[in-house]
Length: 125
Image (cartoon, rainbow, N blue to C red; front, side, top):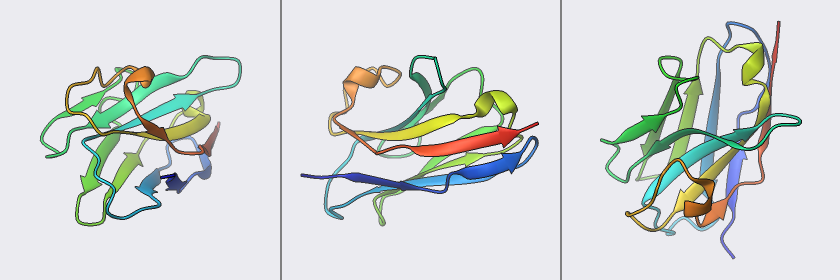
């Protein structure tokens, strides 16, 4: 059973930065699309960002455009989410997700095959 292992969450002041990373427990596991989602207390899970296999195609939620950057290192089979200019409303548990198919609706959580355990990001005001 392949697991996605996340790291990089934590507590940061508003305006600060964090970098999340995620990799599968099996290094040879092939992933086409990577995605990041988040869920704040009392709210539904929401799409944050996604990236295609080549890295040339990326997608972002309007709320994070210009502040967050998704990237991937295929040699290390790892995805990153660089989060800058963090706001208190970014506080949530962040989940990475992996899809093995190229033909998916990247903003839909149901399109992904595997999920990480989640990492807490807390932004203080």
